Image 1 (cartoon, helix red, strand yellow):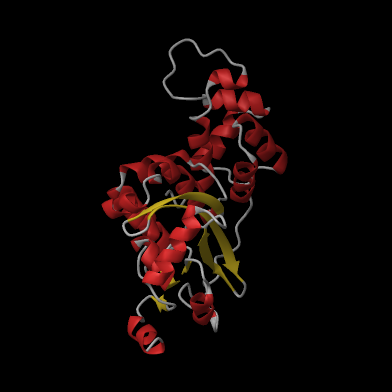
Image 2: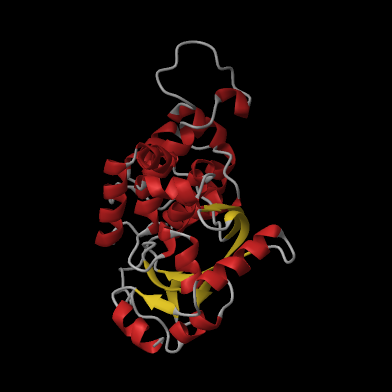
Length: 287
């Protein structure tokens, strides 16, 4: 992550992904760069090549919305990508001290224990802060204290439980990009991205694409060693009063074999919850 030129990095990455034929230009001849040349983007957007160069180099960081919209069209951005480009082009207010990423709303751990589906809470860095027993039994990646990003990209155990992980990795990185926005001065986020880039070729390649995707819902398979194959839906909900935290729920189609599998898994565990760094407290509450 270049903390000094987020707009320029995004423009450059997306320009390199657009083929000349995609925008009606001839693609023959010797091309030193993948995708479009800077002057081609400028011509198609109706701006000067010098001005576009200033945008990529970070010498101009506040293009007008007319220019932003033209660039989004040329770079063939979808709605999420265009909104991300617009955010990068807006002057950013001074960063305010972030509220704690570890503090759950009062009574929330009790709520987790009452839910009859796997449920856990993550912060913006994808640290699991709390989970009910069904989530912990479902996957080791849902255990409090785990960073789900690091586990998904570096832990071989993740692929045993999530056999469709490889095809989901682009969406995971795109969602992280969308949520990060232009917030490049968060040292913890910067360190996390640096660690992932060093440890995972997949992450490094996907992060360099600057794909943007909101995510939030979806479906996938978990291969559980005790109850077998489970096809589950996923929902993510932002917590009111703690907007940096998300409640993640997994549930199965009613009456399906996966729903039966979750029911069986619930009988093998017990209604409880766990919080990162507080397992002793959880055990006392369930005694």
